[in-house]
Image (cartoon, rainbow, N blue to C red; front, side):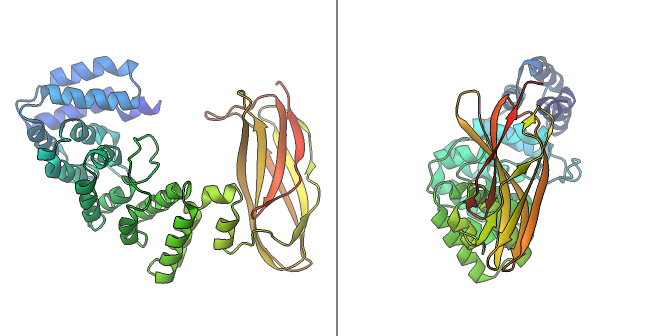
Length: 371
């Protein structure tokens, strides 16, 4: 079943109607359900969420703020009672925060709206809705974000980091400075919840696209403070720098203790086959020799040209090792060359490169032919 059909399905629309009806006798659950279900087949996920919140507004009595109160009363008493077993929650409750962003984004409703979003995020993560408030009421919303960072519920604390990410996927961009949420992240990077620290790491990763120096300075400050457990802090650092590591950024490698220009020599890459079809296995091997001791992080890079003529590179982690002077390592891998939902393998010339820390070595060519 496609994500949209499972996330906002007729059964879930019916459940929303029943829960709201239980909180408000004047709500016509049957008319609401009929209206939304009729439109679902032609709509993608975001449009399904919007359609549901629009229908809620049509059928809920009173002002928008009063309607939000009804939606709050319609929630099961706890996320667990709603059947929520993961961090992000159930999509059945995504229209609730969408409703707040659409109909309560006014100065007179602001405090009530932000309080509601902190409640709704416990049932389905509300960072997309918060972005509209950050855009329109940045000062007031950031004050709420700061409070959320100290909340007892890890889902609310995570909202503080996630909603303020510079490059939140699938959401609007908010014209805030890259460092505006650092005081919030300072409160969250040593959090006991991996759900929260993952968001902190992704937030730092977003900043790193534009200002790696700021990321490294912040990570250094956190490291010196020593508040986070070593394992958890290591997770944050690796996640925050993951794209920079893939692209071979010397500063990122040096920060992690990997010399940017490692003292190693690689033999030419040996390919088992140089002509492959979609679904075949690319098997390769190479010998690495070290002239001095060093920490090494080895990746391999497959490059091609996409249909538009632009280059494309995919970087895959291979191995971490600590070598001594004179040590030899054999590196080998069998990589299946297969089309996926997001990447199509097309006939043409490809290259395979080994990357050791930030240094790349001579590529080997192979060809993909029609199957």
